[in-house]
Image (cartoon, rainbow, N blue to C red):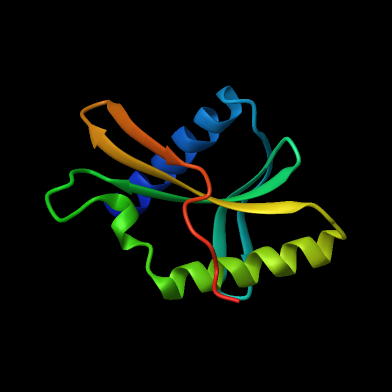
Length: 120
């Protein structure tokens, strides 16, 4: 596994554990629709939450969440709409970001609920 993939996998594992500790119920991990993937799908109360996890080994080249552009937002929204339809779920949706920076063996975590809104 390439080091970037290993970092991403470790970051997703940390994010899932973090969300569980916050009371979220993990429904899916690495859910795919075509070539598009959502890292984590969880339930938080009345919300189905689509979580994008961004992990970096340092912020030298920018904060992890800065890598989420409008194109990525709209792709995640398409996956979310498909997931809700496929599962027959009628609930509120929310899009969160868990941005992580690795410092040795520790993670610095910034969780942003309602981080973005897809275009209509």
